[in-house]
Image 1 (cartoon, rainbow, N blue to C red):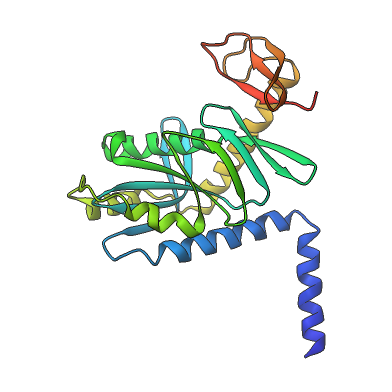
Image 2: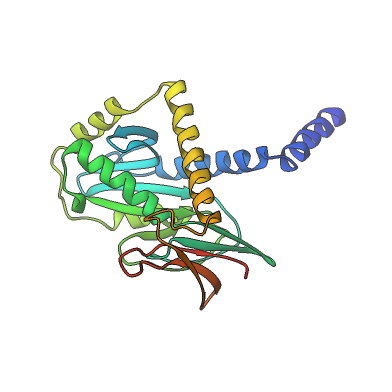
Length: 245
C-alpha cells in the first residue's frame, strides 16, 4: 500500500516539473467547470469542448450554455495569482509573487467565438452572453462592461440571473451546434498547429518592431502598469503589449 502511494506521489511530482503540469491544471479546471454547469436546471443545455469552422478558420470553444434566456459562451482560464486587465487592452497581466506574465486578452478570443457562432446559427449577436471564468483562488482586478468576468463558484448564479425569454427554439440551436462540432482528431490537431503558427508569426513581427495587426511601426511608452509598446497608427489601431523595460 505504501509503495502504491509513493508511486502516485512520484508520478504527480514528475507531472508538476514538466509542461504536463499546464495540461493537468487545464484538465482539472475543465472538470470543475463542467461539474458546476451540470448542476444548472434541466432547461439549460450545456455543451463542452466545441470546435466550429468559419471563413477565418476554426474556433475551439470551452463551454456553451444554451437556454431560452440566451446563449452563454464561456472561456475558461484556470489560473492562479492576481489578474489585472481592461476590456480594451490587448494584453492582461497575471501576477504570481514577483513574477509577471502577460497574456492575450481573453475577451477578444471569446468575441471571435461569438461572431463565429452568430454566423453559423444566423442569430443576432445580442442573443449571446460572453463570460470569462477563472479559478476560485484567482484575485481579479478587471474592468469590463461587455463581458462578464467571474469565477467557477459563481457562474451558475450569474447565468440564472438572466430571466428574459429571448429564444424560442433553443433546443434546435443546441442541436445545430452539436451537428457543426468538429470531432476529427486530425482537424483538431491542425487547429492547435494553426494557433501556434499565428503566435510565432506575431512574435516575429514584434521582434522587427512591427505591429502584428496593421504592420505599422511600434513605439515604446510608459503607462500605469509599466512599460509597453503600442502601434504608431493609434487610435486607428489599438494594439499594445507590455514589456519589462
